[in-house]
Image (cartoon, rainbow, N blue to C red; front, side, top):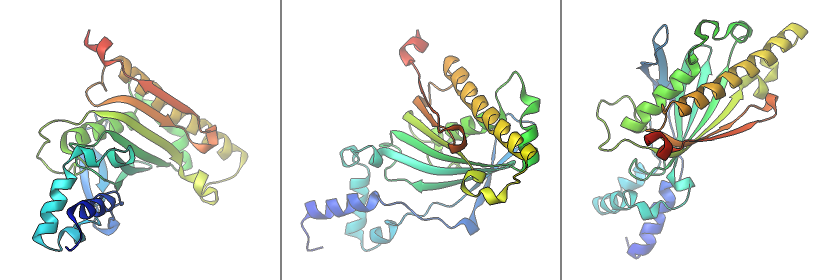
Length: 251
């Protein structure tokens, strides 16, 4: 406590920018109302911040850290205003883990999701055949997750809502497939390679189509302003940016 307050504030700011840690063994299950044929369950890793240990040092440090954490000017960079998470889809099971929460809901501006898809070969061959003419299952889940994060913050299992819903300036979605990271886990025959390639293109194209249609129908305007999608490695990492014209939608 011998440091001047200005230096202590700098320390607090740097600590907030550190990623937090989680313990997957105590993950909780949360049911999403994603308008699918059966309930969608998401496994949520508990949120545990590294800087809480420093806050527990004494009352003065805790009070000073609370003050800094809620001041927007101390979260001036894009990184300091971005919530980051990893979302994994294993066939029909989703798992969400927050990897960085450097600011409170009142200061957050951006949401970044690293979306990893892991399908068995049969899933790739028969994905979403029952949803022709309507948004796909993956989009429904992403939309409901975005809606709950907007209203509840990162801890979506709580019943309390934020005093003001979050409207993110950007949603960045980085899509990848597990077999691109661990190709030895997937079959390598000609038929399986064809199904994998076809399945990936179909899933990714359907997701982009659903996002574009949702933006055109003003489904996302109360949640996000711009959507940036980074495609998977196997498809050449295509990039798509969709900006929602809020003025036009209100007219």
